[in-house]
Image (tube, rainbow, N blue to C red):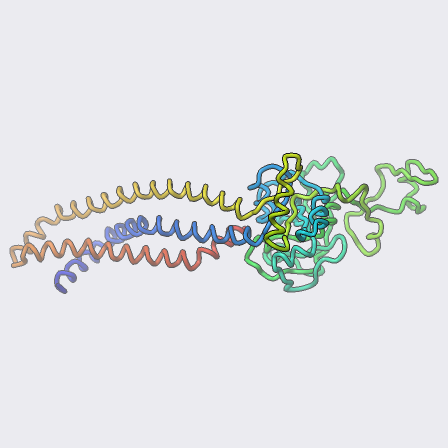
Length: 393
């Protein structure tokens, strides 16, 4: 038996290029469906973990998937906005804690998340350096955002305009970095966190400008009465909030009407969550409330449906590859007829010669299976890290 295996091994080693191609082809055919299942399972775990940590999510009526992707993963375009009144309504109900979200702007391709300090508690985020934002114009960076932007406490970032042709006259806001979060291996790592009021100032809903009652602002005054001063377009608006001008920043109108992209609701109990869900069931409601994990489960069902088609295509490809490998072995036997006849003439039995040929096939299959197993082990070991890198990119 050792002689048979030795002859088979020497033949494969001599024709190393053909052997390597066969092993690689068969290994990939074995690895693709198994590796795909591993990646899909790990992707599902990564995606649903964040959704499971978000009990309820409220937003304007529209696409639930768009709302979840924007609010949880900071992806997709900003959904239709609801109002801050909805966050106040949830808080006033006593059924859940309300965490406002306004995710619309960016700074150098990094999402700016307007929220409250409660967000850090809900996401179990901890500071690696600095402190949380305390006043308007301050921001806290996720670990990946701090690395990519090369910024830390004491540095400044400028919000990016939504359009190069910003006819509304909203200036980019210069924000001061006061803290950096520890790495959480979630989309929070690549975000820039500000108070929701700072996000409203970026949009231009709040602003600060020079004191119109001061003599230096005389050229910017269009008209003046006892109780009202009207300014013209030359008034100087501040694009950075400092200790000297923070008192001049203000908002017009009721804050309850200001926009939010979503509200995270953390109910006190399962019963409170069910009651809260029921309050938004009516057709007359202008907002929707949903469980993000259900939305992600529906998305994963779609992915699994697509996966079944991919696996069917891989199966067809596997049949074609194995048929090609069988053809290679068969043609090899035809080309080696004189070699096999020589083995018979020097005393080799037909069973021994057949054993050599079978051993060659078995060795190739075993090496291919070992290669596929190694690739699967690598996928299982580093797949989650690769998925997190993809989600954070």
